[in-house]
Amino acid sequence: MAEQIQQLEAGNIKISNDVVGKIAGMAALETPGIAAMSGGLSEGWAKRLSGKNVQKGVSVEVGQLEAAIDLRIIVVYETPIHEVSRILQQNVREAVESMTGLRVVEVNVKVEGVAFKDDAV
Image 1 (cartoon, rainbow, N blue to C red):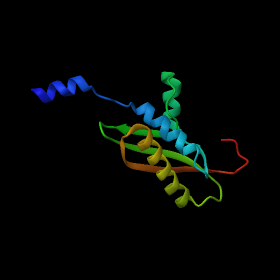
Image 2: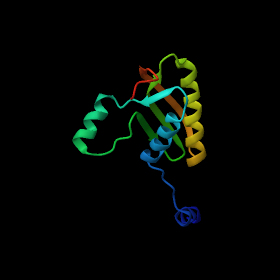
Image 3: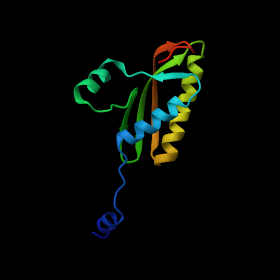
């Protein structure tokens, strides 16, 4: 019984999926070689139908202590995709873990396009 009282007094901290998604998205866009995040078809429909600002190209699942992140990206043409993807995974993991205290168990990357440096995405 004493253990339950301490938990109630200390309270809980819950970090929303949206917060983790924004952190991951910002870290992704700051990674060299990433041209943009890819929203995909279903996200475009969700924006039109719900009017909500859906986090573009980022899907997260947050538990009490851990998070899993899926990223859909467009890379800059002539960028070594495997290298930029590994750096992206590392940058996102470090940003989310340092800002939230959550342990990132996986960062999955799906490359959905290539953009020329002059292209506005």
